[in-house]
Amino acid sequence: MADNKFLPKLSQNLLEILNDEEFYDITIEVGSDPYIKVFRAHIVILNYRSPYLRRILSTNKKKNDGILTNIKLPNISPEFFHVLLRYIYGGKLSLEEYDISDIIKILVIASELNLQELIPYIESFLIKNRTNWLEQNFELIYQTSFENDSFLELQKYCTDLISKEPDKRFNSPNFSTIPERLLITLIQNDNLKMKEIQVWEYVIKWGLAQNPGLPSDPTNFSKDDFNTLKNTLQQCIPFIRFHNLNSIEFSKKVLPYKKILSKELYKELLNHFLENDIKESLPRISMSKQKSTLDITKVTNSDKESQEVEKNLEEAFKRYKKAAEDGNEVAVYNLAGCYKYGKGVEKDELCRNLEFLRGIITSLLRYMQDIFRPRIFKRSTY
Image 1: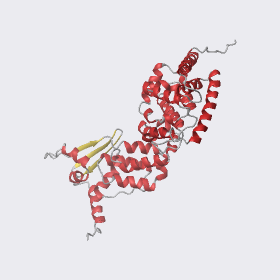
Image 2: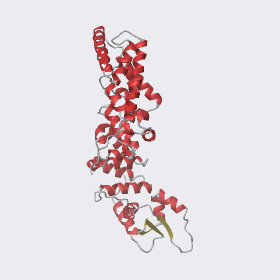
Image 3: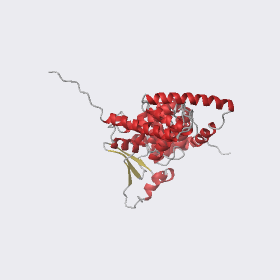
Image 4: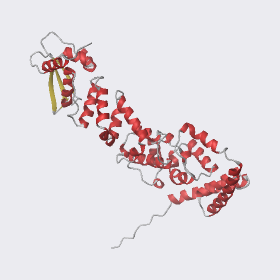
């Protein structure tokens, strides 16, 4: 059985070698102006302890001309390079004495120096001992962990936290500054405990924040404004479960932004909400299950339930008709759907076409009114 009681002495001796001012054979310039520090070291130790430094040394072969080998690391902090240089020599690193932000910097530099055995050690320390700080600075940790393929434990921690408490991410004061990758991770989560319309509103909020020059009201958007927002959100929109919305949510919250949707998606959604009188929002479920669940609900009514549904449809038809006569745009489209599918009334293709045409005209008139709405200026008095 191996006895490791002599390792502390070995570690101490190696650190003494690092501090030796006589037998070093390489100098390392770390940092950039105005803060540059020169470290003395030993090629043989660096070569075997850091693959990153080994690659640099392989392109700086030592010459027998009495001149010391010199390498430069301008993108690394001298303060934290010193910490890791002592680890390279002595094999020890105590993290308790450092602030958490400094530990993150040490982790990043350790990855750059390719000190692979050190990375999971630092990650584990952060997750076990600094949980509160990680949660409070989640955006920073998420961005740092996914910018580097080596930070697997932190990536898993972030993914698990999103699954457990997704709402916290949306309600964070820094929500508008989160990277697109994090936003997509959030909105594709099947366990997100919020209504789909809220998800849509947060996505719109994020998109507008990325383009501060855009108006806050979509009725004031130009064609270029819609294209700008569309390009910003093109990776996010596929993860919105629009079929979870009810008809009013779709009309009031989505239709004003219809120009950022693809023509195919807009047409499909319009048909869906015209054909179905959806009064209740649906809970968020897996997108792969969404269609099959919707199909099942159409065919699982008992006879008694069917009779009750028929009565409700007749009442809904009457209400749609009255609301349509009062100029309600959504009601007009729903009325067209009733005529098309015989919901609450006998099928009548002619009436369906007339109502659908009325809906288009109503939408067009409202759009024209928004464009040519007279601006009222307060008269100046002198």
